Image (cartoon, rainbow, N blue to C red):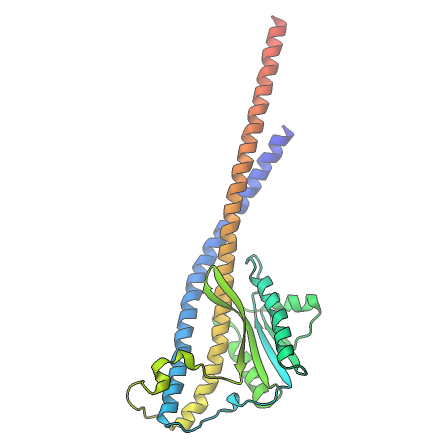
Length: 296
């Protein structure tokens, strides 16, 4: 009977766990849908900014316009922004990002042998990893909302741009998780300063095939000066939105797997419980029959 009671208690515990993981899966699925829409809109917006930049360059008929955020120089100091999660129960999301941090550290060190690397952390999990590994970092944003639209992205971008313009750093990278689907998320290292125009996403725009000639007011130079920082901020925001969508997708997948495993465990425990109960009932019946035969 002690075995039956223990199995019954364990069955109840696993069933409660299954309810929790199933609820977390549904919550993550709802959040993922909203996050996917944000990633899509962010990608369209960034492409629109690049198209505007290409149109602006075409309007200038090949004249060179260079923004300070595009200036390349000898690399002695590098700053890396890490965008991670603030909660667990997301499968391999946080551990994969931690491994990408280690490989990014080696890649940058190999590329710029004598450069100093500074780290800025966005999310509680990267900060916990750095403290556990006893790595130094210059700043961390750990108490952030679940909604990435409320993250201090503008503040982070202002500080990164200021460090670059005042030559306190010579290159800026971001480590984040690229979202492709709920089952396909990949940690990436991307250089965001000096800003480099990705011509591959422009199509015919870069070749001057973007409709009629455009008149820019107050002047092409003024528009260019305002456009480049906006492209930089958009790149950082896109990385943050991708990271959050990846976290929701990883958590949804992990909770779906946990729910299925709990269901399989419940089936095995229920079968074991039924067999043990049947054996107990059979043993009791044999005892009763044996006692009746002894009396008669």
